[in-house]
Image (tube, rainbow, N blue to C red; front, side, top):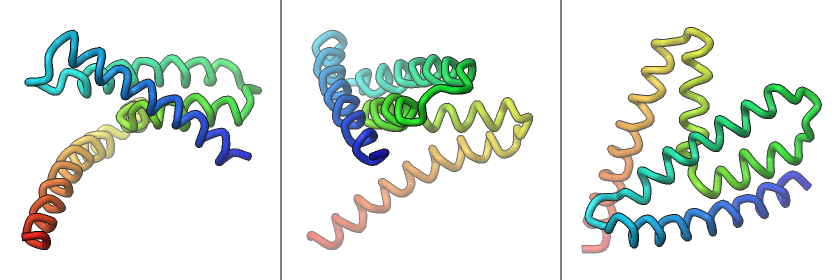
Length: 125
């Protein structure tokens, strides 16, 4: 059942992201990736609201948490989960781990994408 809850939520989040991509591109143009910036910031704010609410509601249902945080927010942006993980490390006073997580995630993701593009360029040439 939990997979179905996440699946439905992710579909809603993905559709919301697509709509936001179109709306922000029309509003601000597409020369700069404003849509991704807006989605990442908005998604992180909403994830903070969701997790803050659940933190105050100890008995909150697991399926609701999966639907909102993992499903909808995961479909909307995984940056919100990244931001939550970084803040949780920081709040636990694991400053070095937080810095390594943020730096490693950003550098690793960019390097991984660049490497994959290079590999595919060579493989398909």
